[in-house]
Amino acid sequence: MTIPPPTSGSRPILVSGGAGFIGSHLVEHLLTAGHSVVVVDDLSTGSLENLRQVATHPRLRIICSTLSACPELPELAATAGFVFHLAATVGVELVVKSALQVLESSFHETQVLLRAVAQGSAALLFTSSSEVYGKSDKPAFLETDDLLIGPPSQARWSYACAKLTDEFLALAYAREKNLPVTIVRLFNTVGPRQTGRYGMVLPRFIDAAKRNQTLKVFGDGRQTRCFCYVADVVAALAGLQQSGVARGGIFNIGGTEEISMFDLAREVIATLNSSSRIELLPYSEAYAPGFDDMRRRKPNVEKLQATLGFRPATTLRDIILLTAASSP
Image 1 (cartoon, rainbow, N blue to C red):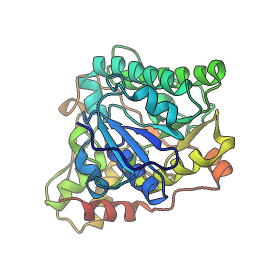
Image 2 (cartoon, rainbow, N blue to C red; image 1 turned 120 degrees about the vertical axis):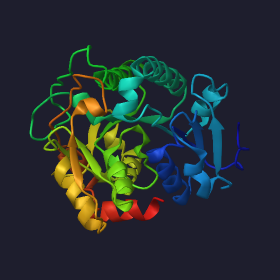
Image 3 (tube, one colour; image 1 turned 135 degrees about the vertical axis):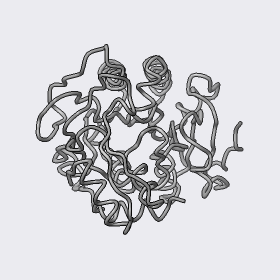
Image 4 (tube, rainbow, N blue to C red; image 1 turned 30 degrees about the vertical axis):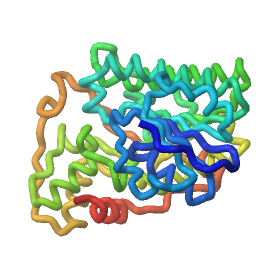
């Protein structure tokens, strides 16, 4: 299914995965900024509902397809003014259950897009993941750090390897095909439209707290994460798009307010005035036996700040309130 193209104008921005959680917010931002946008999304984890507010916008075109099955991709890439590649499998739970799909589709779809973009003059921004840092126990991750991936017997590391392979591929195109590439590693982006369907922790907690149901925390609850509001992430993506000095670089994008999963559950309950309680459960309740988790995942965002003068602005409490207000 294809929504009719917009009227002619400046060179459009191509967004793969533009019907997803982050992608849809990015599309709205780009349209508000005056850009024409073409979305290619197979809706495997995204939804047209995410784009409902802008679906009839005259400068938006939506193509429901994988990149590899889109016959117009060469023309779209050749005429694009910029390309955001956000299409990806989302959520550790889905990754663990569908490792084969993750490995096959990630590399193939990224390769197809890079080949197409390399034939034109557009720059490309590729969204990678904090998962590539693997099992490193550093207090905060730098873009130049060595990476410590877990064993192939643990399916969860397939996503990290897929994203890392895509990074290598994109940078190879940058070196050998002179393709202007920027890579970002996203750390726990949260906000409206994110679903808990694939194991995402904050929407799960918020949904349970609003219903006064038990918040289920896996493991001992002392594992820590840093959450970043989706509007802050989109602002950083748009800033990197406009930054010529960012080309060829790798940038962490994430929050700096570190919190344990147990304390996050308590914060959600307190912020939403919920009567929910917290229950600790073993990982085996949600994942396969022997599930391997990261104890700490905190980004060093000094490079992003030095390049854009940017730091996330939304506090965790406001993130919870804004996300809860947008959910049923």
